[in-house]
Length: 462
Image (cartoon, rainbow, N blue to C red; front, side, top):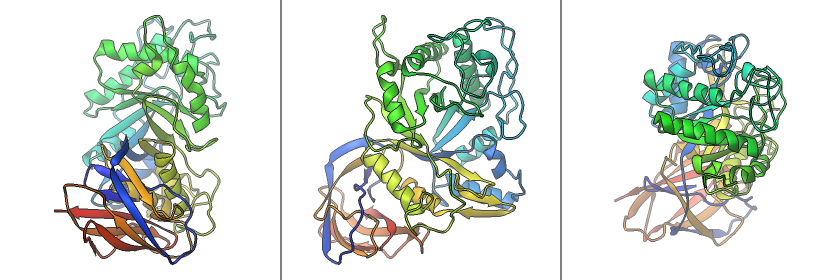
């Protein structure tokens, strides 16, 4: 990865580096511009926010430390996207997320009984802390409607929204009531001093699981998007609407045709959307989605491995830092995403589901964290991905090979003159650490990329 100026980013296509000592030349093409970038982030849903605030013994000092690691650009990754869960539970036992309307008002047309605790399963104070450190985007996403709005009368185990195409309930049609519910959540945040910038209403609708979940196909999602979009318009709420957080990239692609059907009003559901969202579990983001909207990878993690904190590369395992550096690079270059959101940022766990491990009063960042930080710290919102051409197609700035790579990097044609460039290296030996600056001569510079590493070259322009 090479960052040039504040607003232009070059993400060089990722591929394995064969062991070689030959000189390779990479030319940055500032005229070939691709997608804009919204950034990188994580979630602290299902009460993981409380882990940060000392639920399991983290001291105030280390609470500040982990918040800085995640959201401060000067002291950490400077993540720009926080994905909050819109709760659907009537209890906060276990790791459940509280609903703002925990019990049915008696029917979809009855006056709602909303409640707001200024806490939101720890996510509201987390949002305040993240915003104070510069976070621009808060993505509020519902895993499910409350159970009383669904065909199975349960927030868990899938079930469908009552009244959506093909699904009816004795209690009536809850589509508008659910839209009102989501809008009220956004209002509670706004009235409390935090603007929600992005709003979603589904999570992995293909999955039947024992936690909050709700089913939908593309046509059903499109039906509700129009109701929610029109409700937001009537309320005068400026927010970016998203859909559909499918369990995999292919599954999200399968939902898109339903979102693009033109209705009798001359509009499709896609017209109401700003961003199409998908996950990487059942199928990775390796191709562009067939949409005219920006796309975000909004959830992905290693769900199987024991916590791997110190390994950037060993054998290519699912939890290693290099694996995630390549996942990010592939998502941006091959799938054309504008945002990449890892599942959990920090949690009290001994698995790889989080990027930062919190045990007792210890904060242990993983190499996965430092890999995402290598992008997020420098690739800021409104940056633009530009082209790069290499004389050796197997060489990238993510060096997957077992040998160091010698590079000549040409910065391309620009009106600004780069005088020096600083390599920031993440590897088994380094956690996003700056190396000695390199002088730029005639618009190019020579560099060595260590084996098994991710290097961000940051230019200083005069």
